[in-house]
Length: 128
Image 1 (spheres, rainbow, N blue to C red):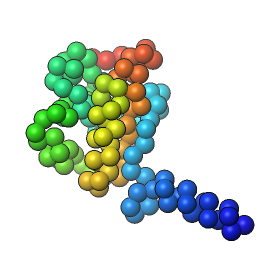
Image 2: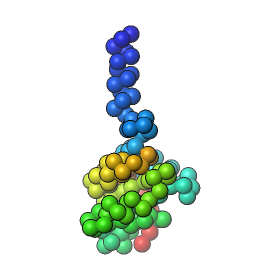
Image 3: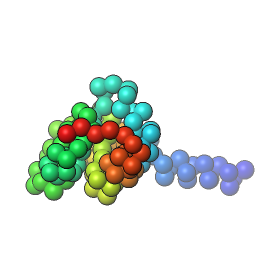
């Protein structure tokens, strides 16, 4: 019984951020798409370069270039109370961004696992 209780508390502690609120989640393409259909309470952020964005992005995505000098300041302008869905080309930059957003105090962060490459490989549409 003690071992079970210890395991539960350990797993709970590692799966939650400060305040007991889940911060970041790697999200599958299908789950990411399902989140997008939930309405305008979400903030969709593309952290690729302007050139990558122009070649095709998710509809409604706000471009915040990962490599720009004011990147962190632009992220700070987002609403910390609203969920953030973030993606890049393959998941590397968006993964780093998700960690940063969590450190900034954002409560719900969804990182598209595999990035826009995985999105396109699943046959999902982008806009230019």
